Length: 119
Image 1 (cartoon, rainbow, N blue to C red):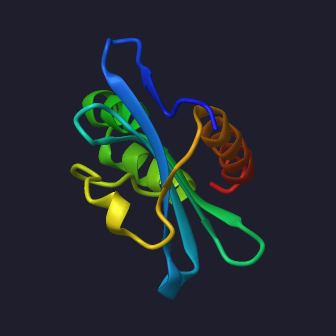
Image 2: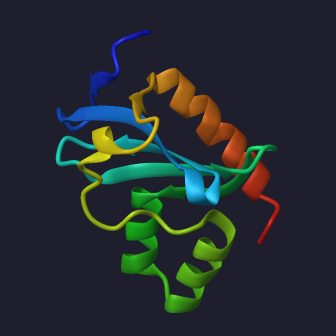
Image 3: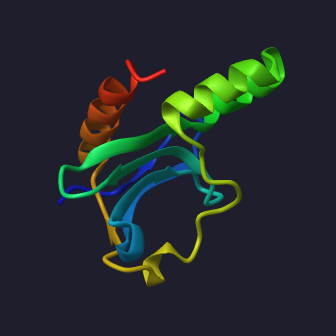
């Protein structure tokens, strides 16, 4: 596996990891910044790995600052809700593991494609 922490454009460290919620049969994949906040999040559910979330902090902040509540609602219905707060403690979750930036990008692209036509 390649190095999973990389220096981001702002000089901070980026970490990619996954966790699993067995009760919901839900895989959660995160791209987290050096403060532990989710920059992007992908969730896939079920045996068919159906994408249910592909949300981005940058997009959410843009909507918060420049759009209205209706636009935020449309975004959340289409791409899901981004984790609020730091995503620390993930190492203790079921099947938690670091993943590569390339794996996260592949999952992100697939999830955005799948959810892109759902709103």
